[in-house]
Length: 374
Image (cartoon, rainbow, N blue to C red):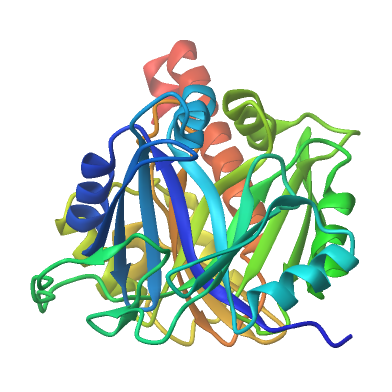
């Protein structure tokens, strides 16, 4: 298929307070604000800040009146990811090609000040894809401005030497409703020429989820799409769908080249991560022959390790601070691995079950008498 090349431009979050959201990324993850926008007129007034670290660009947008779509989005979901924007050398041609492949159209191509933009629906509920064609010279301090209307800040503060070294957006993790996984991933395969890189039914106890990952032809965008299995309990994916109200993005995975050092720096900045049972590390050395980072280093920070046919990966997930507990982040280091830590899901489940069994045994022994609890 001769599909126009589309690269990742940025991820836009709709938020209730753009300044507070930007400060959370700056203070917690080491992002820098490099451009801002105050916009009025259709589709409503808004305030946006563009942030970057490494090659990761995020935009946080706050609706300032009832007409802006960010207002309705945050009323429904709270803060969340609304747009995964894509750059195109020729946005009109890319739009026409996507429409010919049955893409959902949300806004026809429009041109202003040398910019061309258009908006397509995504493969999951009310997330969208803005196509962006930038004019020559649309850069701020070496990083392209994300959208028309943005102005560069005077001069970003220098990056501290101890800033977390986050490099690229490794993948976007998405939850969809039961039975919608095939249609969601097929949309990307048909419209944008994505190809499947991973597929698995993950069963843990009474819970299960279907998963499939699809990757763009350019290789810089990967969606891991998850759905509750109809034959099992919905589990945490079902919890997300209930709290969020629809399918959508539940986490972004930021890549790093040294996860131990990066997590240590994030920890000093106050980023809080999910804890990992001690039993997980007791079994880790048997499960994975680590080629980087010791079990002790991983245990100290709660970092997980897994491997596949291509290599190893290390990952950790932040504890969500979202009021609805529907958005969090992942830090990931890959040493050749091409999958997404499926082995960790099983290992964590086994570790939790092991600790639960040990706790229950201790409680039972204590009730039976102190001499049995020793």
